[in-house]
Every structure is written in structure tokens, then in C-alpha cells.
Image (cartoon, rainbow, N blue to C red; front, side, top):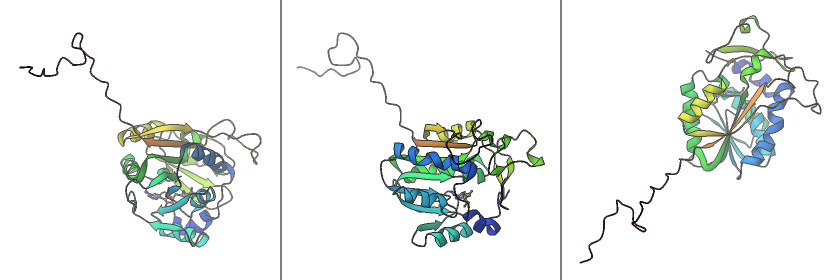
Length: 261
Ligand SMILES: C[S@@+](CC[C@H](N)C(=O)[O-])C[C@H]1O[C@@H](n2cnc3c(N)ncnc32)[C@H](O)[C@@H]1O
């Protein structure tokens, strides 16, 4: 199923800043990145019109953006003509292995229709990630379609059901005509797919609204609308050395004794 109509909405989407409910995701991203990333090379996977890319650049990183939508990339280049933005097919990242200190991706997996495809994208992200690098995934929290939010509305009759993993939910950015159908993935789905591709969650963060945020929050202070994962490459468990057998000094029982004659 097509989750969006970016041919029609790319320009309007490009004008969205980090406003309203999505402010919560991006409010905490700089600090999360500062804590987890120790280099400057960054990939923004599914960069769209470049708002996430420009945020990463403003934090001092050297960023390349990739996306499958020509219309979105045109908006990104319009706002940042000197930027490095590349058209890709899903799950193919045109960079050498072990290139990036951070692979960042915001609001992309909810446009991907199968866990297998999410797995292929994560495998490719892992390929281009440095060994001590981090992947930061920003997405909607599974709880989001049951909330009343400042800037996103899920108030549609088709959402009035228990939405199951892999189904879609309809949403609208309030005050715009940007209507999307997001795939619903649970935290169990993510945990399973991370494990399968050899990634481990170093942090899971569900930002809530604070009193000193610049918004009169609705449900944002009590329920999570956003979910942020920090992932790293899984470190293989170290083999425990075989116990030494008694009475053989430093030799193990299986060692071949050298002839002395
Ligand atoms: C909701 S926009 C988010 C854009 C940007 N990351 C942001 O936060 O503003 C989602 C973007 O993901 C892109 N996208 C969707 N599926 C993708 C895939 N399989 N591979 C790469 N990009 C994808 C879309 O074309 C769109 O530009």
C-alpha cells in the first residue's frame, strides 16, 4: 500500500519544522547523539526534504542524505543546494562499508510495508556503519494512534479498531493537507528484527512533554507519541577459556605431551 502522496505533498511536507508533537522527538536528539556518537561522518537515511539532514548539519556533522523520492530530494536540494543528497532504491546505500559514525533515520520505517524490508535496510545501514558507530532510529511510538496530540491527528473512523502489527493507521498533520497511512510496528517487531540482523539496542527513549516546552501539550505529557532507538553492532560473546585440569601445571589435559627422549 502507498503510505503517502509525496508527488502532491512534498512541498507542503518540506515546510514542516520540528513543530508540535514531533518537537518531542527532535528536542532530545542532539543530547542523545552527543552521548553516543564520537565522529563526524553521518548518513541521513530517508532524508526526505532534508529537515533532519539540516538539523544534523547544524550540530556540526558532515552529512549525506539518501531517499527513494525524487520529489522529496528536490525539496532538500532547493533548501540546501550545496548538500549531498542522493536518490536510491530501498535498502541500497551508495557508500563503502564502514564509512559512517552515525546512521540516522527519522520517520522512515513507518513507511516500509514489511519487516523483511526493514531488516534489509538495517543490514545495509550496519554495513556502512563504523564498528563503534551508532544507528539512531526515530519513529512513532506504538501507543501513538490512541492519543490526542497537539499536531498529529489519528481521529479517523478507520483507526477505531485494535491495529495489528503490519497494518496501517491513518493520520493527518493538523493545519495541513498532509495525510499519511503509517505502518504499525510494535516494539517486539523492532526487537526481533534488530536481533536478527546483528544489532543491539543501546538505548530506547520515549520522550514526554515537559512543562517548560513551548507548547500547551494535550496527551504528550502522559503518553509517549515518539520512540527513539540507539543501536550498535552486536558484540559477539567472548568464549570462556576451558577450565584447567588439576595437577598438570600450566598444561591442559588435552595438550600433547612432548617427548623428552
Ligand atoms: C516522513 S518522511 C521523513 C523525512 C525526514 N527523515 C524527516 O524526518 O523529516 C519519510 C521519508 O522516507 C522516505 N522513504 C520511505 N521509504 C523509504 C525507503 N524504503 N528507503 C529510503 N527512504 C524511504 C520517503 O520517501 C520520505 O522522504
